[in-house]
Image (spheres, rainbow, N blue to C red):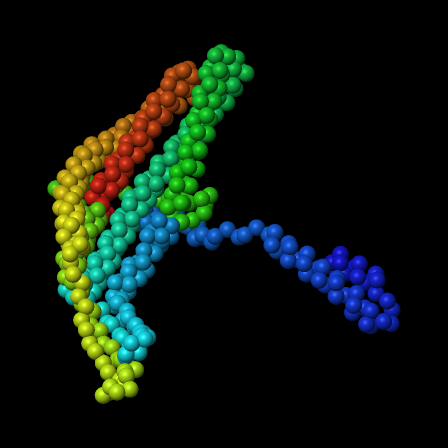
Amino acid sequence: MTRWTVICRSFVLPHTRHVRSVLWLPCWLLAASTAAGQVARAPASAPAQAPAPQAPLTLAAAIDRAMSGSPAIIAARTRRAIGAAGVAVAGERLNPEGRFEFDRDTPHQAYTLAVPWETGGKRGRRIDVAQATVRTTEAEIDLVIAQTRSAVRGAYFDLLIASSRVALLDELLGLSTRARDTAQQWFDAGDAPRLEVLQAELARAQAQNEAAGARGTVVAARAKLNALLGVAIDAPTELVEPELGAPVAFDAAVLRARAASTELALLDRRIEEQRSKILLARALQRPDITPEGSVTHGFGADAEFQTGWKAAVAISLPIFTTHKFGVQLEEVTLTQLTAERDATMSRIAGDVAAATAVASAQREQYVRYRDEIIPQAIEVENLAQDAYRLGRTGIAAYLQALQATRDARLRSLQAQADLQTALTDLERAIGAPLLP
C-alpha cells in the first residue's frame, strides 16, 4: 500500500460512495504522477553487448567473434544501404514540366507539357558510377575487416604474452617467498645470518612489485581485446595459446599480397569507379533536348477553330558550360589513383620484406629459447634450489640462479611477443590473412 493510498483512506467518509470516489481521484492522479516521475528519473539502460565467451578462445574463434561483433565492422557494413540508395537515386529520371498560360491576346489559354530528354546515355552512366561506388564500398568493408583481423591478432597475443608474464612472475614470487621462509627458519635456528633474510626479503619484494605491474598490463590488454570483440570491457576473456606455425617465405608473402591485398583491391575499385566517372563526364558534354507540346484555346469569334496545338523542341546550347574541364578533372584523378596504386604496391613489397625478415629472425630466436635455453635455465634453477635446501650454498647463489632463470624466461616471452608482432605486421602489410 503506497503512501498516497493511506492518506486518501484516512479521509473516506463512511456510507458515502460519491464522496469516496471524488476523494480517490486526486489520490490516483498523485500516485500516477509520482510513478511517472520515478520512471522518468530512472537511468537509461546501457546498450546490449555480446555475451562474454564461456570457454577459452582460440585465435580463430576470437577472429570469428570479431567478424560478427566488432563495432567497427558493424558500422562499416551499414555503408551498403548508402550504396543501394545511391543506385536508386542515380536511376531517377527527370520530371516533366507543365505550363499554363493565360493571355489577353488570342488564344487566351495555352496548356504546355515539356519532357526533358537526357542524351548521351547520362542516366546509364550515372547508374554505372553508382554501381562502381557500391563495389568500392564493399572493398572498403573488406579493408576494415582485414584491419580488424590484424588488430585482433595483435591484441590476442598481447593478452596472451601478458598473462604468461604474470604467471611467470607469480611463480617466481612463490619461489622467493619459500626462499624467504627458509632463510627465516635457518636464521631462527642460528644457522644463517640476518643478511640472508634481508636478501630474501628484497628479492620477494621485487618479485611482488613486478607481478603487480604485470597484472595491470593484463587488464589493459584484455580491455583492448574485448573492445575489438564487441563484449564487455571487463569480461574475463581466457585464451588458448596456439601452436607455432610454419615460417612464411618472402616470395610467398609477396604473391599473397598481390593476389589478396584488400588495400590494393580498394584502389582497383576506386580506379574502376573513376573510369566510370570519366565516361559520365564525357556524356555530360552532350546537350539535352526538351520536346514540348501545347494545346491552345480561346481564339477570336471569327477564327476557324477555337482549339489548336503547337509543338516545339528546346536544346541546351553548350556555350558557357562545355564540361571540358570536368573531363580533365576526372582524367587527372584517374592518373593520380594509378600512381597511388603503384606507390602502394612498392610500399607493400617493402613492408612485407621487412616484416618477413624480422619474423624469421624472431622465430629462430624464440625456438632457441624454447628448445635450448629455457630447459637449461630451469635445470640450473632446480640444482640451485636443491643445493640451497641442503645447505651446500648460500642464499646469494640461489637468488642469483633465480634471477638468471627469470631473466631468461622473460626474454623468451619477449622473443615470442616480438615474433607475434612481426607476424601481425606482416599480415597487416599483406592486407589479408597469412594463409588463404
